[in-house]
Amino acid sequence: MFRKFLLKLNFRSIHFKVPAIFGLLFLVSFQLVGVFFTRQLETQLIQNFETQVTGQTNFLANSATAVLQEINKEKRIEKSSELFQATQGQNILNIQIVDKHNEVVDVASQVNRDVVGKLTEEPDVKEVLLTGASKKYQYSSSEGNQTILRVIMPVMSQDRTLMGVVVVDANISSVYVQLQEISSLFLNVMVIALFATVAIAFVISSRGIAKPVSEIKNKTEKIAEGEYDSGDVTVYGNDELGTLANSINNLAIRIKEANASIEAERQRLDSVLKHMSDGVVATDRRGNVVIINEAALRLLDTNEEDVINASIMDVFGIRQKYTYRQLLQTQDELILSSVSEGEETIIRGEFSVIQRESGFISGLVCVLSDITEQEKIDRERKEFVSNVSHELRTPLTSIRSYTEALIDGTWKDDVLAPNFLEVIQFEANRMIRMVADLLNLSKMDAGIQKLELEMIDVTKLLNRILDRFDMLLSTEDYAHKSHKIVREVKNHTLWVEADQDKLTQVIDNIMDNAIKYSPDGGTITCRLVETDDNIVVSVTDQGLGISRKALPHIFKRFYRVDKARSRAQGGTGLGLAISKEVITLHGGNVWVTSQENKGSTFFISLPKVTFYGDEEEW
Image 1: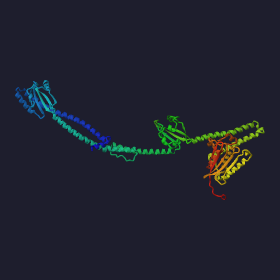
Image 2: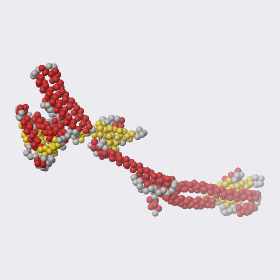
Image 3: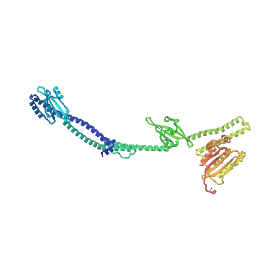
Image 4: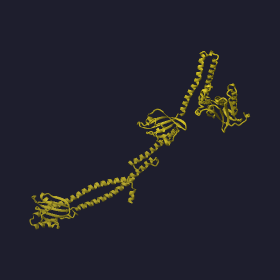
């Protein structure tokens, strides 16, 4: 059972340490007291015994004067025997009377009677006879089972003349036996007291120290795990442990409130970061990403697992251009460019250093903004201004040149003057058309262009437009080109809700381009197709076609495939751009397919309207 108790006992626990400390302190204290007490007791007992024996020896020395003065040996022995009987005690082992000539006068022990009348051979006796000074010491018996105290005292006459010595051997072993018995008793008491002290210390430590400390430990572990409502620590008193218990309870409340506040702030921060249109990236002091929101992941076209704990230099792909120290010191914006699925994304990064009051830099925050559209608008604006300037400069240059020629006297020439004026009129009209187109595009961009919507039969409208172009091609201006219009239009009603004038303008523009760019004798095919939800008008020519490189730009403003030919025919470069804007306003779409040297096909798609009713209701 004791072995099981030792196995269960945790030697690192306060249940063990406190009793162990008390036990060790008690043991050390008891040892010190025991050693001091034993030494003092030993000294006192031996001193008392020596005093007793010395007193008896002194009595014998005083009484032995009469013995040594007796000349008759028989009477001397008789007197010495009487003296021995008077002083014999239970601890006295032997008494010797030695005269000044080293002769043993008499001995009390019957065992040693053979030395009587002989000279003593003991050097200690000779030393006392020589010096006249008393001497005492301890020695072990020849058998080794006794410790003997020998006291040698000189016998002096009345005139202080040395007459001999008295030697007393006393058994001092009883003193040591008594001392050993007292030490054993002291040791037994010490062991009992030690166990009692340890037991009392164990009870006190368990109830008064270990239990509160254990509760405090359990509470702090719960706090560390985030369980703040696991119950208060019991306060057992007003001592230091009670104060500590109160402090732990208050600490749990403060930490709970602080964590609740931090969690609320974190949730607000997460909500702000989640709903921000701009991307946010935060790093630690080493430049590794620790926070990134969804907008930043979307802009960088990556996922959180690949970014967290990665270097911001690698995430942005700028390690070859910048160092992390340069990012910390830069005040400029950083423009990043990435290509995803063939589309270029331009990102602006603005950096801010996270710095404590002490000046220690703990990280970096970067705000990412998608400026792709802004850059695109800026480029288009610059390109538009450049194109407008270029388009206006050409006719203005022509007008100025011909005007200067007329001023210089050409107006007097009946042949050149009308031609010059005709050119001036042509260029002026082209500028007027260009400005009108620009105004229309401006209204569409601003959203102030109004559509006069009405129900239109696309079949009738398309046939009227084609009839007009048939008449145009039959005039003298186009008779030599031998163009032919082929219609693939079914004779049934198809309704759309549209602005008739705007829709007519779009179809006119596409037909006009088809005639302009078709070779002599070319065929222009017009089709009208009905799908489930849309009505599609297509115009196919047999011209030079449009290169694959030019197809994405065909509907941009001022874009021309054949710039010289377009200007020569009076085009503004805005017709297809206006057509696209008009169809977009109608909720439709316009696109083109083309093969070089074979021709192009332009498609116009408009939402179909199912119209129920008859003409009488209208």
